[in-house]
Image (cartoon, rainbow, N blue to C red; front, side, top):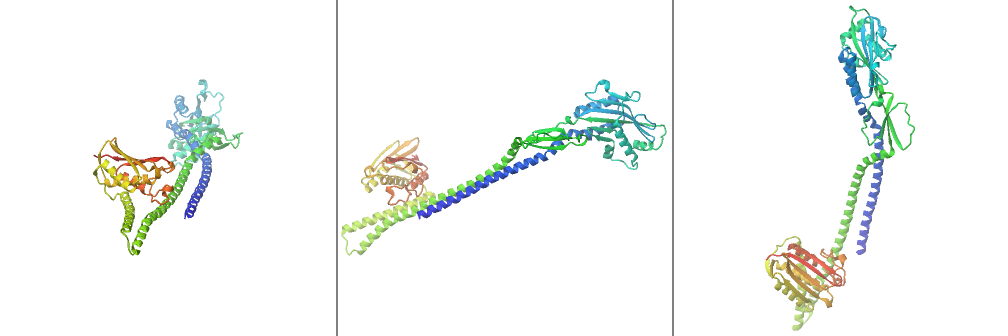
Length: 555
């Protein structure tokens, strides 16, 4: 039986150990896969998040293109140099990537112009040209006038947009109203690092321009038009790094830029700037060690989640193993309890059976024999009754199915009656006692008697023949009744001291060879707890033990 239990125990342990090893392998594999996934995810983020950086970095440019440029049309062509200078100053202040602005104070007329564009009877040319910028000297603001050209050529910016406008006017359907997007795209010209914009005329003016291309209009009308050419510096765009933990460096470089360092120690990507900056790109570069920090920050929560799940599985495995271990121990305790209880019952039953058979088979018994058999039957019946009562009382106290009686007990008389009853049973039992601080207290005398009897019986049973001594003291200390039972027995091993109050537990020694149910001290602990007190023990092997009981004092 013992071998089968050991085999079962080893099998359980092997299964739990195998489970833990398997879970540990899966845990490490999961961590590896999670780290690989985190690395791939961050590398994909490195490539895809550049769009967000671009969008945030060109917010000011979009605002300039979509909101600031159309403001030129609010002046309806009547900008002069002073007003244009004020307008440009706000642009330069608000949009640092605008480096210089050329202002063309222009006219549309029915008569030819020397500088500008002549299509049929339609003429479009500048009256004056000005330049504004933080680095423009004051004496260079005015570049051109009809009276003083200074050998300045009107140039491609004016001519390119003028041609675009003329082409649009030629194909204009005057029976419908053009959309704002249509007008904006045809009255502006986006080139490399430059945006040229012409204020949008009214629909009536556009109709007149279309008519002027075919014939002379009465009174030779003159229409004012303002054209501004914004020179842009892409290196002045403020880069907004929306992922500073992902992108270590972000630079604006020409499209033709080819980095010399293409080492595997770095990750890089790029994205082209829009519109007039299309010859340039945002160039992103980060070292592998820098990216690894972001990978780890992304991997850490995943790893913690995996570890938490792994910890739960291991905890479950440990609890299962612990439960199996406890069940194994409980099975052994119950197995020993049944064996010992059977032995405890079997011995008196066998004696009673033998005595009964002797009485039944004897033809005649003397008075001495009758008294002997009567004493044997009485003693063995008492043993059975005591054992049954102890089991019943233990169950009742555990389940709290009895009530605690409260009677006044004279402590000296109570101890003396205990001493006398045990000395009758064991004449070689040496008792001493002392009482101080009180004479009576209210308690349950039956339960207290059971407590005294169990501790006294243990003191006698577990003491060598030459040291069967017990000293009982009762003291009132700080409102508590303190009983001490001090014997000179074999003592309790330090390794077993924490187990002696457990049900069915027995210390293996020569005094337990004849069997013991293992309920005595567990019964004592339940009694003390039921009475609202506590019990502790101090012991030294081969020196003896001291059981201390503290109960509430009620006078």
